[in-house]
Amino acid sequence: MALVTSRIRYDVGGGNAWRRFSEAVRAAALHDGVRSVCEPGGGARPLLDPDFVSAKGLEYVVLDISQAELDKAPASHTKVRADLMSPDLGGLGTYDLVFSQTLAEHLVDPVVFHRNVLRILRPGGRALHFFPTLYEPTMVLNRLLPESVTQQLLLWLQPRRQRGGKEEKFHAYYRWCRGPTARQHRRLESVGFEVEEYVGFFGHDYLFDLSLLHRAQFTLARALVRHPIPALTSAAYVVLRKPGATTRS
Ligand SMILES: C[S@@+](CC[C@H](N)C(=O)[O-])C[C@H]1O[C@@H](n2cnc3c(N)ncnc32)[C@H](O)[C@@H]1O
Image 1 (tube, helix red, strand yellow):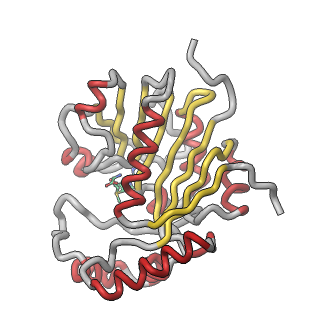
Image 2: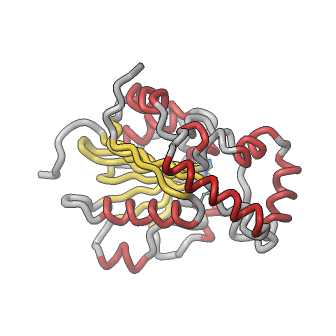
């Protein structure tokens, strides 16, 4: 079995997971020497708001395959239309920090994705990715059921979602979307990254409107935080580092 050297931690999921990732990205953006930041798959809802970006003097590029999604994002952000699945992604420049939120699960080829991120990172730069994970049962269902069924289920569970609105639903493959297993470490290292940190979350908010089930699920989630089973996380984020110099000249 591979030696896992990253810091592995666990916590409860749902809103807490989104918050924890947002804090991790902000902390990484404030790190010494970070000036240029790229968010692939930022789409309609880029994580950093224009005030944060301008207050910190960051160059922030939101990259997405869909012009329709980019058009919904704040007008003041720099937006670039590009396909992360393109094996010869070029002309995008290099960045001190690259991060993505709920993009990885939608990509059919994780090797191409992570290689592209490695390519647009400067040496010593970091990549942070937040994604839902298998084999939490809800994610397994989402993976196995036809899109027409999961779309209806999601609208039923979360009626505030409107078809074609700000929160579009995208097909999820969950390739390389797992908790902090030894295999995940090997996969990410095989692309050329050092894995610095891996945080797994148990439980999620999809059942929020079904309060009994929601509470039962979080009771189980808290037990799993105390006695973690990496294969049962519902989401995770990973902090990757491209080997090389740590600071800009
Ligand atoms: C679930 S949304 C996430 C949007 C945003 N990051 C968030 O957290 O709300 C996934 C985004 O990834 C984009 N996307 C899907 N495949 C992509 C690809 N091959 N290259 C770039 N972006 C892609 C979609 O257009 C969409 O905006």
